[in-house]
Image (cartoon, rainbow, N blue to C red; front, side):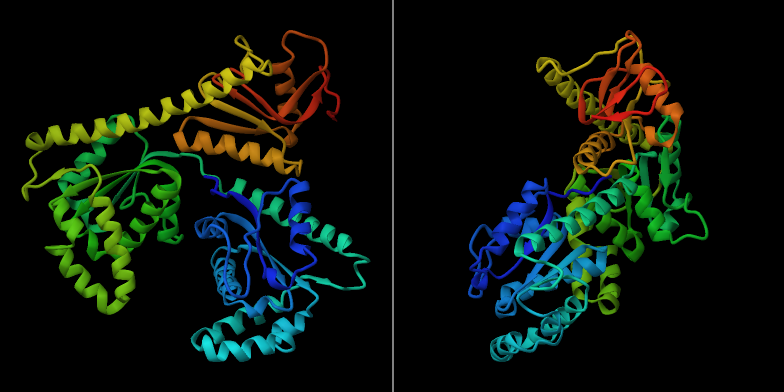
Length: 484
């Protein structure tokens, strides 16, 4: 599933000494080139603007452009921001473009010159942070960046053009990686339980009931393959599933593997709307929510080994999941006849959630369809579907085009489709002439004329509700397509 990015680039800078409005010009050039950048004003003494917007932009930007100037290190706010960017770079490979504006990279790396004066004050007022700030500056100062003034650039205008070009390269590369890691729903249900709980009758009976009802399930205790990291497999399977069913037993909190995966599930629920259904097995929602009973014993042992911060994080996740709509088995002795109604209710609940997701997708795409027809831009092909496309969403695209808008449109279609778990297939016409011919046949079924199709071309159950961006002409014969 495509990550949620609101901005292409986040600009980190100290506005106090940029009287030439360099950052304003850079921001404008990025906007003119089609990038969405965030430029919150930051100064030596404080910040102006909406702090929540600033924090959101830091998290939801594909890359960061750091403008190191003479007074950048004078701002504790900028230096704290630098630490956050460094953490993202180390943990997730976040892209960074260091820009050295009227300051030499060696000054940033060694904190001498103007930076030395700034750190003389920091040693007095921010002594506890100085070591980390220096380390961050040393690391970024060692990266290959853009330097001005420099013989490479005749003017600031050329300098800004070079930054925009590197931004384009990094953002396009980032979007291609997003496309590679976009998850399609292989499973309906991620069935997660503590490893030893596969022995419980209720676990086996519920899993079998879901399978008999036609759901594709991934069982965390059975479907793990040898030779690959277990944690990575489980997280990937969860992201490839439409619903997570969590078996919360009295053993659950004793497993740090379960607790860490629960953090991932809760994060995925918050950021991507992933559906979570907790099932309480021989443990009450109250015990899970308050971490009493067996959960208290588990966390007492975890605290000495993993520390209070990690334990509090796990507790908060359990409290959140225990506050959801609940169902479960309370008796120590499981009896199928007695618990059959509860099992059927869980299966029905899963079915309802999946049906709601699928129907919501069709409503959303129908709205796109209706809007495009009203604008006179829609093309309806009721009698001709892409091969195999009668009951799925088919997306024609081209992988040999580096157009950012095309990739944005494609990612948006994938986001909608993947979120709702409807059958989906992407067909890349750059991979072979057969797919090009296939698309020609679909579009040109009633005419011998040349017809322009915008990629990505989307077909929903055989209907072609909307064309998007980057038109290419498709001839009736197998000629090479021409860019419009």
